[in-house]
Amino acid sequence: MQNKYTNAYGGINLSDEKVKEQEKEDKLENIKELGASDLPKPDDKVQVIPIIGQIEGHNLASPQTKSTKYEHIIPQLISIERDENVEGILIVLNTVGGDVEAGLAIAEMINSVSKPTVSLVIGGGHSIGVPLATAANYSFISPTATMIVHPIRMTGLVIGVPQTFEYFNKMQKRIIEFVTRTSKITEEHFRELMLQSDELLNDMGTILIGKQAVEHGIIDEVGGIKEALAKLYKLIEEKKSQP
Image (cartoon, rainbow, N blue to C red; front, side, top):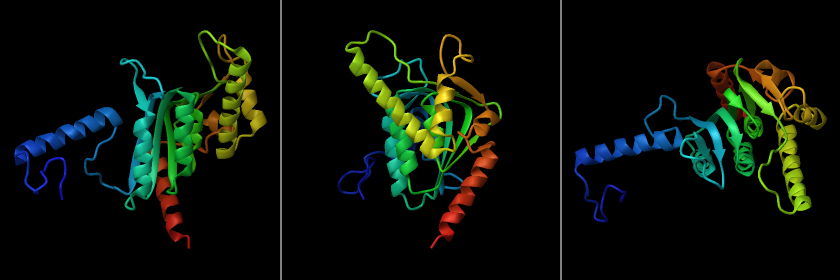
């Protein structure tokens, strides 16, 4: 079969050593760009998707900003959904938020995957990171991790204020609907957390640390890698036992 290292006649375009060097470079590039690689894993039935830094959407983040590109995550999710060997997904979150539409698009895709999913907030799950965390079938947060719940922010000059306000209002409703659909928090309580003005200086919102996110019904449980993987394996076995 022809691939990028062979020609149409089955011959190798590169020497064996060159092929190995090229494969190694490809793996290193995957680690650099996607936070993952195709190196052999001890358990290929579980795939890990890291979502770190800023969620990059239609606009490019600055080169100095650590970012997760939604055009990378979406193909990964589609590939995992189509791969019969993959039985579960662990989403590891440490994000400051970012592009709202891109983040919500990723969250909807995670929520629509047919395979068991577990999310783990290890550093921060701020802003659009909240629906990304609740998108999984079950969610964990480490004891010292934080989540910031706040309204959609906008900066800069706004042209056509009524129309812009309506757009942001609809986007806000979409986020609230998603979070309340995928977690235990009620819409009323979630709005209260978003609009609090006594926690964030010169802003509105609420900072939740570890178990506080669980107490408010956003996250399911406090835990780490061990607990998250144990829960994912349990969900995989439960799915297998279903008729």
